[in-house]
Image (cartoon, rainbow, N blue to C red; front, side, top):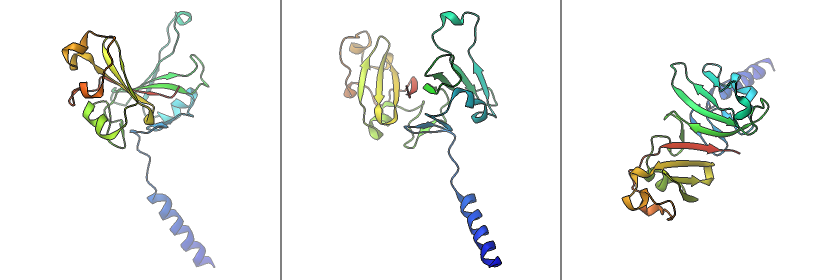
Length: 184
């Protein structure tokens, strides 16, 4: 009896130790690294215990509509820019994330340094919005949207905010300027 219990204990500990560790830079529809939709702002200190958290605080908070939180790694490199769903509420969850570090990627390799071709080959584009300075590409399966600077688009689209931009008009080598996750 004692030997079987010991064998069971050893086997169980082997399974637990072999369990795959969560990738701290993996982006999915419900997580960005160790962050999930359910994480509250007051839990960030424990999640990023080895990193630096900078909360934007100023004297004129009455005139500000949000409180952005910047996450830096130990070397001072900016990882993420977070914005809570409810401004100035430490119990609020995260509503918006801007990915700043190229190590954050989806399972299919899409990240801040990807190209439009990477998006087209791996994901369904929900829609493309035409703004003053960028084409905003939405990937609803991931709750992600990315921007591509209009300087990378054909000349006839650069100064036109009225025309609809089609995926076929965006060059394959157009690089992502901003990579955002919207959980709001």
